[in-house]
Image 1 (cartoon, rainbow, N blue to C red):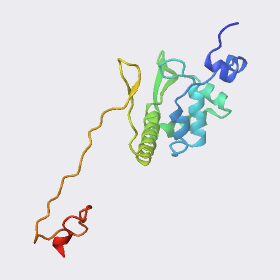
Image 2 (cartoon, rainbow, N blue to C red; image 1 turned 135 degrees about the horizontal axis):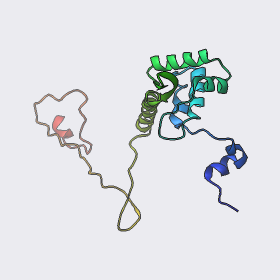
Image 3 (tube, rainbow, N blue to C red; image 1 turned 180 degrees about the vertical axis):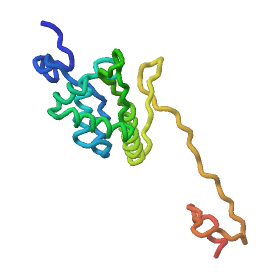
Image 4 (tube, rainbow, N blue to C red; image 1 turned 30 degrees about the vertical axis):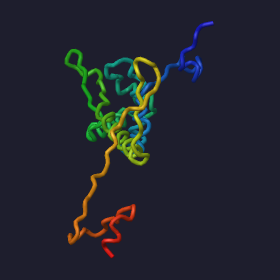
Length: 182
């Protein structure tokens, strides 16, 4: 018996034999939520991601994309144009013998926009939950140790008789100085 990959364990071998799409989760979670794209544009991006197999930008033909989505090539051009206008997609046209044969599609604008919302959401959660403790591993003991955080004490304020104190100034907590004011 061969060892199965995590993807095969999750989805099953039969389904993966037909291929699978890998894309950053930020696209799935933030593109539609923050109305960066329409549903049609999202579907277009999803199909386009299925052609990204390397670090290079995917370059399927518009006819292929239209066939995969069940729409016209004109609709594909509309999706491309709209995403370009929004700054979410860059297109590099590929020519052979002075004839345009396909295009390579760069998602960097979309990824940057989605990451913007991701960072905003996570910063808000951090603020809402307070500052989280940072834990680090000691190289010697291989155990978790709490970082040393200096304790900052508020400065002592000395009150002088006859001086006007600002409104809201606190009385000393131990009751000292109360008799002098009576």
